[in-house]
Length: 252
Length: 252
DNA sequence: CGCCCACTTGAAGCAGCTCAATTGAAGTGG
DNA sequence: CCACTTCAATTGAGCTGCTTCAAGTGGGCG
View 1 (cartoon, rainbow over the protein chains, first blue to last red):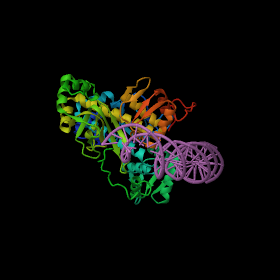
View 2: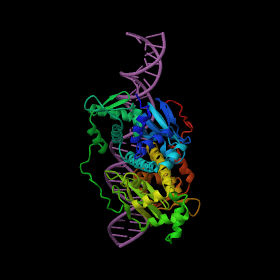
View 3: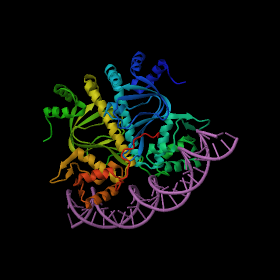
C-alpha cells in the first residue's frame, strides 16, 4: 500500500516544493542520492541538540518536531505530512537540530546527508533557489504564528491551530464535517498552541456542547468549520466597533 | 561622520554575513547594484502587506520591523543594527512584506531591488549559499524566541530580551554597567516580549530597587548583567531540584 | 507658562494555570 | 468473556500573574 516503487517516488518528488521545476530524469538522479527508510510510530529520527547531518523528506506518514526548554516544557515546532521536509534549517544553518523529530504515524522518509545535499545544490541551482524560497516562507509562517501566540487568547489559538491542521490533514468525515487524519491528543494540541491539556479539554468540551466539534479519544471531528474561523478571528464575542484596518499613518 | 565613501562600504559589506567569502572587487560590483539612501528617524521603509520588491541592508542607524494584527496589537519582529538585512524573507519568499519597517535611529540603508538580486544570486552562487544559511539561522532564532514566549513568564522574557539587546547594541556605561544604545521606550520593550507597558514598567522599577538596572526616560542602564542572566533562566526563585537535562528516552 | 508625552502607580478583575480527584475507554492476560 | 492495568480525558476548586481601567507625576519643549 505505501509508495515503494521509484516511479511513484518520481511522482511524489515532482510535487515537493523543493524539487519544483526539475525534469523527471533529474529527479531520478536526485532520488538516487537519498536513502530510503521505513519508520514506525514512536520512532525518533533525530534529537534536539545533536549535530545535524541529515535532512529528511517525509514520503509517507506523519512526523512532529518538538523543542523542549531547559525545564521540560515542550512546544511543537512543526507537524509534517507527506511531501514536507524537516531538519533542513538545521543542516543548512547552525549544525544542530533545534528540536526532536518523532514519528507519530508510520510511513517512510528519504534521508539526504550533507554530501548528497552539496552534490544536489551544486548540480541543480534550481533546487538552491527553491530552498531559499522555502525557508523564507517558513520564516513568514513562524512570524505570524509568533504574533498570534503573543496577542491572541487561548481559545482563538486553538481554533487557529485546528484550522491549520484541517488544511494539512483533513479527511472528509461521513457527512458534513471533517476529521483530522492524525492521532492528536489534547496534550499535542496544547503543545501546539502553548497551553495546558486541561484548558484544551475544557475548550473542546465547550465547543462540543455548541455543536462545533465532536470529540473522541485522540481525535477531533469538526462539524462546523466556519464557526472555527469566526472563533479564530474574534476575541470572544467580537467587538463590532473595531477599526477595520488601522492604516499605519501615525508616526508610531 | 557616517560612512559615505565606497571604500568604507566595501569594508562594511565584507563584514556582512551575506557577502562573506567574496573578493573585494566582487563586493564593489555588488555594491554598484544597490541604491544608497539616507534615512531619518520616524521614516518608514516599507509597510506590512505591500508587495515586496526591495531588500534592505542597514549600513548605519537602527531599524525595527513590526507586525500588526487585525486588531491593532503589534509585535516587534526584528530590531536591526548596522550590517543587518531586513525585508529579505519577504522578497525571497512570498512577495509581501510581513511587517512594517521604521527607522528608529537615523543612518543609511542600501536597497536592492528584485532585478539586482537576480543578478547577484546568478552571478555569485556564494551569495545564494550564504542566503540559505542566513535564513536558516533566522528560523532557528525565531523558533527559540517562539518557545520562550510560550513557556516563560513575563519577567523572564523581559530579561531575555534585554540580554539580546545588550549583545546587539550595548555601549559601556561610565562605570561597571552598560547602556543600551537605542532609544527604547517601555512600550517598545513591551511589544518585543508581548506584554503591556504597565507590566514592563512595574518589572523594571522592581529591578531598579534591587540595583539591577537604572532607569531613565526612553533608556535603561544595566548595572548587573549576571542578575539578568539568572532572571532569564529561572522561573521566579529557581527550583534547585530540577532535572538537569531530561534525556528524552521515554516514549513521549 | 502650560501642554504633552513617557512613565508610574493603584485597584480590580479575570483568563488560564495548578493541584487534585474521577471517569471511562482501550488494551492485556488469564 | 471477564478482571485488572493503563493512560487519555474530564471536571472541580482555588489561586495568581497579568491585563485593564483609571488616575496621577514629572520632565521637556513649544
